[in-house]
Length: 260
Image (cartoon, rainbow, N blue to C red; front, top):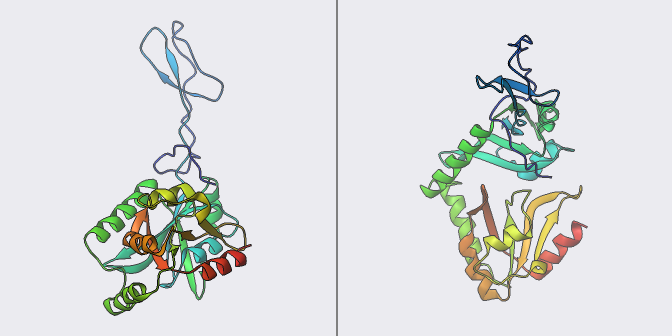
């Protein structure tokens, strides 16, 4: 579940405000409910209520991730927590082994920190507190690298990867990989806004726990549309790069049935 409130930049939300002197001028007055903080206003109204600070943005930073790590691996690593987004950090076009994970609620950060130095595969992963600014800066760097043409993988692998897509037969079905875990059908329809899609033609896959897996299948009106839609390959939906693959109705049906 996506937390839609406002978060403070940094801090863990547990800092206690300094005790304030209770003795004030006889002419001054207090306003606000019990538990509120107060700021002195030199006006005749004395002290006025200050709203409590918003909760911190629920994000953690990961270090030491395996180089073949996937979003599903991170979701399983944080089993039981609400995963809103996973962002892998690249440097010079190569995966750095670092990433960010946005959680559903600020309180889940403490639970995520308990996974520090637990393993994904053979690698132990370090988990740190992070801040909204660090996460947004990482997103900006990823987008900047993509616009600058920095490769996401080595040239030989990228060539075979692209050649395979170009030579694949189109049947009107595409598989999407790398979706934000919070993405819904409306988001996918907006991503393919140049094409006429019905809500029933979008199939978001779930993992064994009933959570979004980051993959989906989309049925287009015809093979020509699905081939044209490949122009959206590796474009962003939110902060994520979406990979597109030509697929088939048979592959789609099998994937959907496995997720049930």
